[in-house]
Length: 572
Image 1: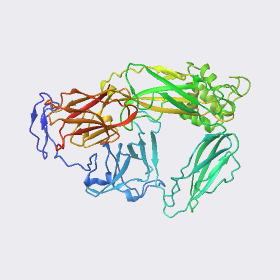
Image 2 (image 1 turned 90 degrees about the vertical axis):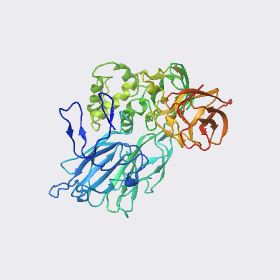
Image 3 (image 1 turned 30 degrees about the horizontal axis):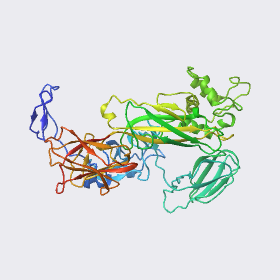
Image 4 (image 1 turned 180 degrees about the vertical axis):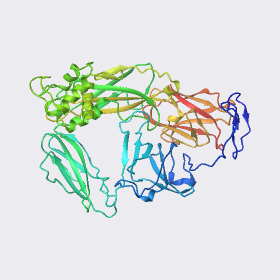
């Protein structure tokens, strides 16, 4: 039906062949062109008409149409195969497809574009004057992303180079260090090509250490090195990847003793935390170098950062790949001052960041003594600034960061009530060791998640036979269930279900481990005649200790749907 937004009155649907714009913002009603069916459509659970697009979220984007220009002199332009193809892309599902059109601009075919490549939330694309495709990848999460990037996609004619992948079972440890290297994931896009593997140590004499695909190497000498993998196809095309290895210093072990992963927390109430750190090379653990950070995030999948602390800063990675730790350490003065002293000296000094970055690139003398710092022209100003950011952050404190082996933090409730009811508290402890000269310092960390005592249905880890929405759990029938994994039920005596029912009502059963597991509590929900007026339904539970997967099961034989709606569970 049509709605009058001035009066909120509903009017009969319009004729789709001649819809009329009756808005108050136009002088006279305007008859619009006939409505057309969707060009391409798809549902979250898959669409038979377009099954190739699979299932998932829906954030469809349409890009440019490619028109092949035979007169364009370009080695990178896309081939004629894509002539008159519309490029479509999906921000949520991370794919790009080409929609082939006929001369009447009708859809002929859908074809995945670069199906072997993993796009990271494509959000915009255009063809350049060179005929290459330029694409913006938004990055992993909704917000600021380190992996957001602008990429250019070139078409390479003839033999395509191989793609190298490199990994190691460990990247740091005491000398001698034995590492298992892997080239798993390396591939040649041209079928039939055989690959040759060459492993080298950098810096070094260039000699090949192994020609195996997955060798085991033992590194004897202390220091920071790079292990490189060169793969070549039979036509001589190659790709090279490296991985940094630190020999002589093992990473510290960080463990959050309390609270534990999955525990409950309450806004405004103290959370006492205790951290243990061990490190083979550090004679003693400096509590001031232990950082504990916290962050409140939305309890939705794919919306949590993998780390919170500065030790994962890209500036540190660049420093490890350079020679910074030959002359500096975190705490101790070597050839040059410690990074902690540098951070303290320039705290609050305007323009210090840019000036320090310039000194890294161009070199300097007389700032900390008579020994000059050599220039590093191989680094861009951007990389140098990232290095400086990491150094300066060593002495900075944020409201979300505390230091020491133990402490207490209080997290205040977000002003947005909806966000507060769907929150997780991320707690991460991290420690940077002192290094083992000339090896760079290493960090270790542990990240845990704490839950609020009020858990909405939408944050359940799994479910069956019902429908989840931001507001409620609906379409509940006999045999439906929600599962919350790893719930600490120690000291929990009652779980309150917030429910409404204009349907049949039914029994809520609380079970451990599975929908047929141990029954620890149940209650019969009597309909209140409304789907929107919720009420508290207490469920007393048997004394239960430890962590369990809690199954919230719904029982009403013969009822397929419409037992009740569930908004949340409260653990007391």
